[in-house]
Length: 128
Image (cartoon, rainbow, N blue to C red):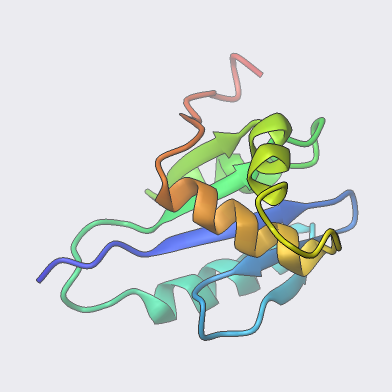
């Protein structure tokens, strides 16, 4: 059986929150090269042996803060889907509780990418 791994990422200027599964707590990483190294190391440790497909990383489009993660993920062979904030806002309106935190956003973004929302990040350093 081939199981696809989905990761939801809520970006901010200095940090980002990553949701790897429903069972694991949301993890916080610095939005730096070092933080990205820790993120990718943890993500690859979770990659199931039965899956030859790379994980799909869903990231809410946030000004320029998401670009470093998108570029590094693409270089490493991950599929990257950018989610419009209007889409995540629409999904969040289905919740009974109207609380908004970075951890909740990361879980919501993961759910959005599992529902095939967003578009594939195809930018290159030249086009950026």
